[in-house]
Image (cartoon, rainbow, N blue to C red):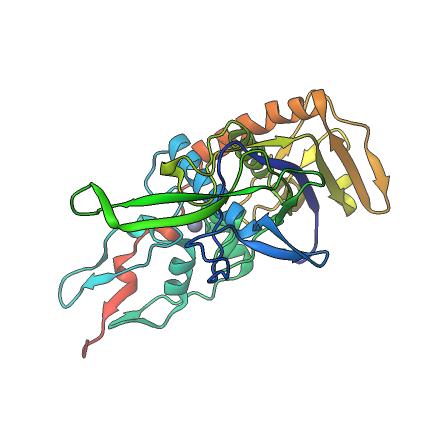
Length: 344
Ligand SMILES: [Zn+2]
């Protein structure tokens, strides 16, 4: 991605669980429970926390659902876990079932590979940063892929000072997968964080397009409305959370700070569409906070009415961009590209 930093935004928020919360630790625990919440050392003490990677995972899946709801074209966002399976050839066209859903990273990998299994690539591409960004689906543009680092970071969520942090043991019964009844052998116990714990985290965006501001605002709104479950056991009533976003800071860096009545996205700053962005990538909220100029940075801190005004232009902008997301030829299946090797 672009080496220089042109803009950035930060969204500090608090997550509060309304019911039991269990983000599993990947390691065997010494406590003797089958599952217990992940902990980390902080200020010399072990404490519960919400790993940023878990939050990022659920936010990405939720964003994929939003994008697929706004724009029902298959493959408008990729399935980040979907691989490509080439088939056919030998006189028949080479095919790949469900190619539109294959992850963007896998597609770029295929486009630059000389071979995939017994197939040879007749049109090898060396993907540049601009090529990758331009052709990535909205989810990969925002959250990153195996081909470029994310411009979306969410920090680990640490307990707010003074927060509740009690944990309770629960006995659960597994469901027999064959009969659907309770399975005697599948009894297990776990420890979960009780309702009312508060964790502080922060989302940061760098070199954002304005629709991405809208996406983060919508994700945090859905999180605050309890529409996104986190951690283990959503079907058992775990992971029900709410969140509170009280302010958003946006900064323009360098020459991009000249238009102080507009928030400029990457597209407006680049203004050449080389990254597949649009020149009209800016927002004009009804009110803007007083900007603070710090060296080469112009900063706005949004809260209250100004934050509401920002939301009311950023969300429709997001919907408009996702609705009109262009088909990219490079991401379509091209049977001419692949040839089955003679000895394959
Ligand atoms: Zn993608």
